[in-house]
Image (cartoon, rainbow, N blue to C red; front, side, top):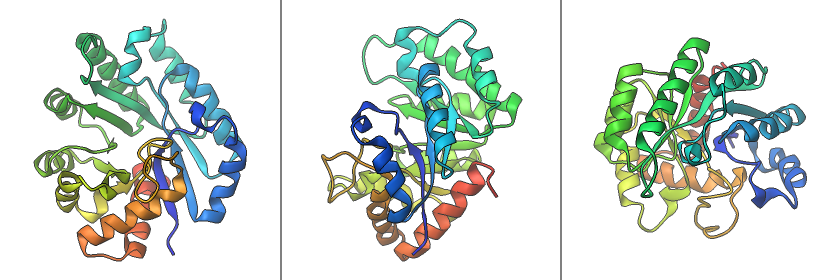
Length: 255
């Protein structure tokens, strides 16, 4: 069976505090080959880098999540991110983007932070991990301007939006949502994604796929997401795992 590449995980989350090392150490025996840890802020970056140093199969991104704009952007955030990006395990800038889900979010500040990090990614020739929630039009407009290499993670948009993201040259990441009963929109979207632009992710500890829905998610559970993708695309689970592993390697410049 092909190996799992979890292209977006959050193993620094407090949900893993009680058994983090035990769980991570067990993942290679559960068919997990590689993991990209997605960063949410500068404090999170230090924890992510420590884990990536400890486990050969874990890599890191660095970036500030749009929701964290509420806590304020650290002074000289760009300089601090640039310094963190020198670490040999850092392969991407992320997770960055726009999130308009809750009232009261400062959209102007989010946009400025998004642009700053896109410019940093361009400067450093790194791909980006993009978060977009209830902000599709604004996010796509900015991505059209910068045309970064990268991935639209935890994709929840339409097939039409998926095609627009693909036209920008980006990859699209799908989570355990593909296994949910209300997954019709996601399943239509994945049909619009060429096989060489598809990656799988957990966003763990969130988004656990059926039959684990409601439980803490981990990278080994991608097998269920791969099976759902295979069913939607008329492929075998093995084909999906092999292709998405290769795609993840290409996305993060590991090939």
